[in-house]
Length: 309
Image (cartoon, rainbow, N blue to C red; front, side, top):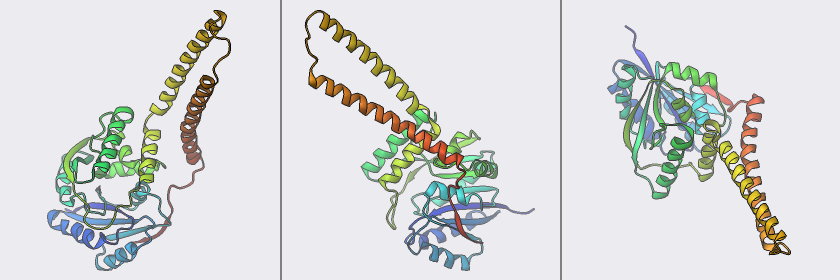
């Protein structure tokens, strides 16, 4: 009986300090999976350090390693999307290169997959991170559960194992400007959650900047929630109602002789407030329109420069 294949997909971006530790750690999983052939797929997301060089050196030693080089930095979500096109496993594990997620947990995840779960998510019960990082993450995942995808894990996840059927669906969807983890969750396949504590980063510096976090926040809500549009509608009704009430009050006061000339301060305050609300609404609509335009142009979400197999 032939062995099944377990593919491990790792996005790489400025990870030259992690790679010497990450690859041996992943290779050591061979002892834990005697009944599986392992495959390692690394996607270099436009790194400008020695990440690609180190990956190719390791590839010379281990023919199970595939290296996918993107033409520039597209972000970790698009790097994962690109890598899914090159995995061949019966199941695919996705893990970061910084080893904050314990690779040994794949054993329990694969066991769940063997028992029929097509999506196995390692969810964070806690994080060995700073207060500000925890605050942003917890707020983001709370809002995702509240306004976007009901039942979304409170601690979030990006350490996941999926069946090849799920991989096929994700490749066919090939959606740009999205959170692929949220997309995996929203597909509705049989799921299981495995809690763990995300460890502190030991090597290298995180490139998960504030601008990337904001983009992920916007992409997630625009892709999976109608809450921004619904918010604009409700805000419009509220402002309109208050405006009518204020208009009737002003007319009544004028007719009664209590007000001769409207106050300059009040007029400026109202104009400024309403213009701010209108500009905010236009910005939200613009986010949706941009994504519609981006999808209709059929421009690829990433470009693969070279593939080393």
